[in-house]
Amino acid sequence: MIWETAALSPRERYQLLTSLVVPRPVAWISTRSQAGARNLAPFSYFGAVSATPFLVSVSIGSRGGVDKDTLRNIRETGVFCINVATEPQLAAMNESAGEWGPEVDEFDRAELESAEAQTISAPYVADCPAVLECRVSQIVELDGSPNTLVIGEVTCVRLADEVPLIPGTLFADTQALRPVARLWGDLYSLIGETPALARPAVDRPPRG
Ligand SMILES: Cc1cc2nc3c(=O)[nH]c(=O)nc-3n(C[C@H](O)[C@H](O)[C@H](O)COP(=O)(O)O)c2cc1C
Image (cartoon, rainbow, N blue to C red; front, side):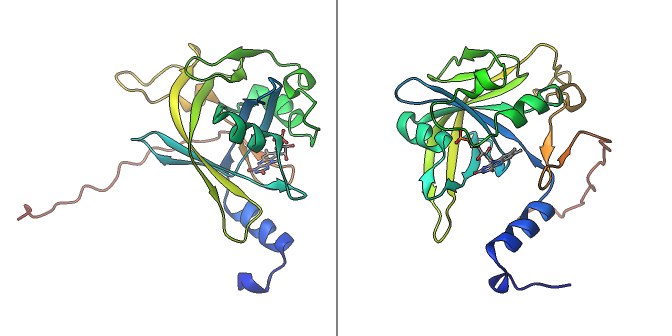
């Protein structure tokens, strides 16, 4: 099978993209509107961009040509929290994904407590073991796409005590964190085996 993507429908492109770029980590984004309403929703078009500066990206689609609540709040306030969605929170994360109107507080819908971030004015999921507090670095309107790419600079990382660090490092223990990832449709993937492979040692002639 081979497809030239120009000949595909938007639905077909979506199906290939979301089933082949897998598993995708889930940024469970909490924001507050300018008027003070809390909002929470998951986004799996989420990626690591740069460590220094500490940048992450999220691609947010539009709903019938109108910004989703998350994007509207991010544009209004310039800040957001990325809660790393984990196994015990899968059902609550899914509940928060309903296409609710802006008046609905998804923390209440999903029966979640919020707490206040340290470096920005935004709520985060109090029970979430890993939270990235973000300030907007860039908002990129993508040519020809209904999606908007938000690049956030992480100003603070919050990690719960129950997620240990690998001694001598700031690597968080993945088996303790238990992040969830999205596949396609209603399917998710959980952390399974995590084989370790040492990279090949390359002998190079001295430079210059
Ligand atoms: C696991 C998961 C991942 C999702 N990823 C995205 C995404 O990357 N981009 C997007 O626009 N919508 C995504 N959605 C849909 C949004 O979560 C949904 O449109 C939500 O209602 C948006 O909420 P808001 O209007 O409060 O921002 C995803 C939904 C689920 C369940």
